[in-house]
Length: 403
Image (cartoon, rainbow, N blue to C red):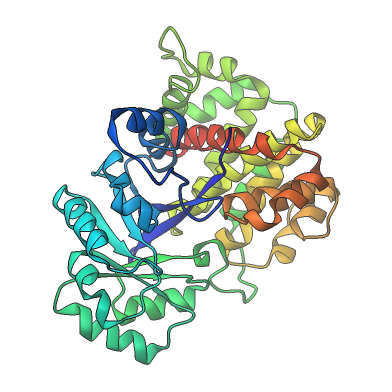
């Protein structure tokens, strides 16, 4: 058995990560509707997506999870870790007495409750009273109605979350209106596209990332460069000693870490550190997503018999958000980079085998389940291979991108 799950970041008004909404294949977790007793609880804990997986996907950040009416009345949220779980009540859940009773118990046990796709109706007042966060579809709700909702909810100190925020202009407008949280893909798009001029250090970092995948590496020179930067040195040692590598003995020397990572590993590490520096001043999640997408593209390629293109796929994923990081068009940036033609073609959305892998990776990370079967068929990868690959990628990313 396997289940598809992705995640969408939720930011605070300072563009720090507040949590992630977990996106499941059918929109919410699938549970039996007659859950009761220790046997059913044990079955749920062993066979479904629960505590250990939630921490894998969100770390210590909040995990927003959609729960249906049946989930609520059967107290399924109580199986989750209350310190990070946000119980999202779907908009089609009617506030019948058994639902309200369940939500009261869930709230009393210390869980955060959110109302999804909020549209005010008098009958949902009992749920409004119990919730902490109200999610409003920013694109389908008029400014006048949003203002009315603020007036209605502000006296009860409800926190407001704008979802489906797709541009920086929308984010700024929502922040000015008083929203505390924001969800959508605005952060992965350029803030301004007006042909900004890249600085010399930025051009150097871009070329370093592109060149490091095509040159013979001088390990002594790399060691010297890493030792000059205490932050990079710390991250390298933390990375090589992480549980991901399962080392029996702690690695304490930079040179030893470099040799253990090997040529391929150190190329990636240097590229990721350079990307992180380029992304300063942008949401940290943008650099994190670049790293995770790079690894996911690489792992997808290994399943699609593109092992020989692993390095190219990693580079492709890493550069796939460079327009948002640099606030410029992809076309303009690629003119300055010595990347291979097939990578440039894929980054410009012009197809090819690498482009198909990138399209699949983006669709999966965004929960685009409706296109999944067709994309897997085009790439030549079994659909059931994706969940463990994505989970492994997230675990790798948690180690590499931790502050």
